[in-house]
Image 1: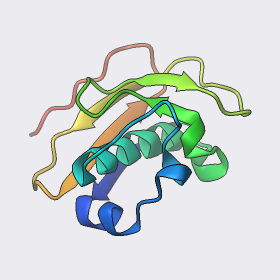
Image 2 (image 1 turned 90 degrees about the vertical axis):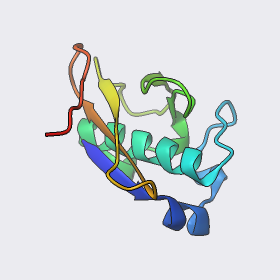
Image 3 (image 1 turned 180 degrees about the vertical axis):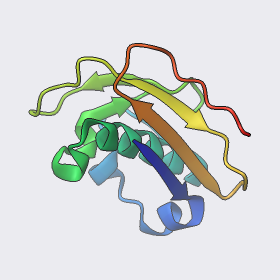
Length: 110
């Protein structure tokens, strides 16, 4: 699964109660866009999408390497998942990719 988020769009329409768990924090618009991109990538990789409550899928803090921290949703947790940030070509977007694998992901620009 992959997701790309516009920092401006997330900033304009962000509702932390719908996206963040109370154990998570994302302070700036860039951090919020990255948290959302990480969660969406995970949910897309599982094939469940927004059937799963994004606030129940905890990802690492925006300043930390991307990873799934916890799965608190009622739906079954994926047996394994790898998550990586994608360096956007513009500073006004944040992106992440997730795959159902136990291997580390490495994203390279070509």
